[in-house]
Amino acid sequence: MNRTLSAALVLASLSGTAGAQCSVWRYGVPDFDQRRSTLPSSGSNYCVPTSLCNHMAYIANHGLPNAFGHSSSNWASSSEYNHASTMISAMGAHCDTDPDGGTNMSDAVEGCADFMDARNIGYPFFIFGYAANDEWTPSPKKMAAWIQNMHAFVNMHYGHWEWDGGEWERNGGHATSLVGVWDHCGSTPRVGFSDPWTGNGDSKATQSAFAVKYWEPERVFADYDGDVMYRWIKRTDDPNKIKVLDKMIVIMPMIALTNDPVFNYVVMYTPSIFNTIEEDQAPTHITSPTGGKIVGAFLHPAEARHIIAVKAIANTPAGLWSVDPSDNSRVKLVDLPWEPRTVKSDRHGNILVLGDGSVRKYRVLADGSVRLLQDLVTRTPFDAMGVDSSNDDIYLLDVAGRKLKRYDGGDLLGVPYDGTLAGNILPTGTPTIDVSSMQHKPFITWTGGTQILKLTPAATAAFWSIDTSINVGANPKNLHVLDGDRIAYSTNNMLRELEIDPASGRYVPAIHKVLDGQTVGDFFMIPRSQTNYDPAKHSLPGWVSNPDPADDTPEYPVCLADFNCDGFVNALDYDAFASEFEAGHHVADMNFDGFVNGLDYDLFASHFEEGC
Image 1: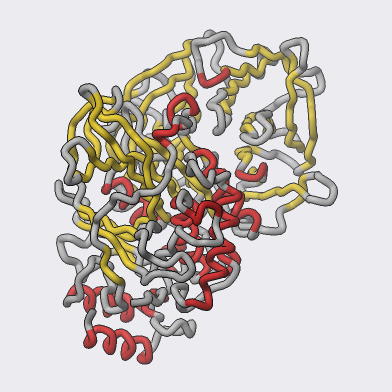
Image 2: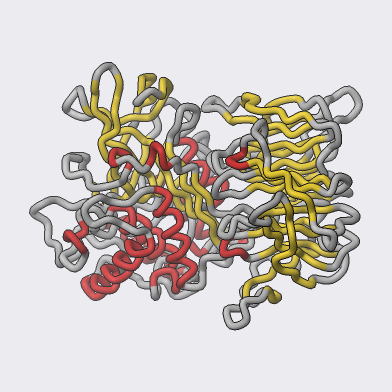
């Protein structure tokens, strides 16, 4: 049965039942086939670009048709087959997919961002790519959190693991498009996904019926190639082979975090134009857990939760807190011995805190706690901190000493590049710095000035000079260098955006604006694309995503009446649709005419009566 796409994100809100916050799904995620005669090697190793294209086609049907060339009421139709093949081929080219070897995660993250940029929709989104390591692993609940909390799209990757000499070894893997997660609050969650692989007997010249596979993974403690920890697995008929959830790619609509210094809370803006549900666009507030002033916040790149730094108040010490956006619950991570000034993260999700007495690096562990990794104690406090999200280099600015120190690879206890600022670099007021992950160069600005400066290191001495100066007006602060080297900063509590003019190569006020004009406070934070890809480990053949010819998980053709995508048609589907219809949400626009009215209700009721 062909699947007809719906119109927006569906969250599990089943009339206030107990399971309302424990299941989440998207209705209408396509299920394109990767095996196509027009692709190199017939697409046998194109699971990553194909599963990413499932999300692009969904986005194209929700207000951004450029994401996949155009929108369609039926992506499974034969009339769309050649177009889908062209788009999958283009995604594979951007992702550097090897026709005979597959796609590594770093190339997938960069390639997906490039694909979206090439279609002029990249900036409203950013891409996170995370692979399991010795202290972190994907889980059904974490994947659900990205959809539920951040309206993100998740590619679920699993590895083929084989028993070898007392431990499990990864021997390749596979990429799929996550459709939903059910009962993730308990110990027996269920995941549903679109699998791009097709059988050897299936056509490579026509699209198979869209379908969903379902797993009930188990949480198992074992030795996974030296990482002794719990991971989520699916057993196979062979006791020496398992499938392990071990990577995920997150495509997330743009957000921004800032503070309200008067009422002392953090505001999260969600301005993406494809969020058609009005309440999804409304700012949400994160209050201080102690009443102390919030001085910094960021979205943790692997956990779909916010990390905030809070100053001391009365008898409560300063500290770092984790905030779950779904219910605004807060968990203290650690007390700090001094007042924090700002907080950032590196590409591994480690927390970096700049304070009055030192700079500290904490690692977030699999159980949600933190461990102190490094503590750089300083005689004179640094004034600003920046992080290169592509290689973890940390930049620390000492205005009084006229130094900008770069700690390569994020090693705070190593010997830094101890660069002196040129005589014409004269920071005053409150400085901020950030780093281009494309050029690996720091940008700096300060209140009291009128420019943003890009700096460059000298080739033969520890010295920083001005590479480029950008005139931006009085009192710039809160500098951010974003994907594509776009710049965001604030002046007079108003966020401004700059982009590079392709004709002149100079920075100009952004034409494609997303956050420009938003009110901001003492700080703001905008995420940027990044991955914890480790070449020493994840470039090995065993960690590349390639086909899964041995998977025998049954597929269930998707029918329009299964509104909550759980593989069954029952009263829960009717209740879910009725709830969305009564609220007037665009997800209930079943006939794609841009309106929610009785025609949509009659259409769904007709499908429901027919069943599947």
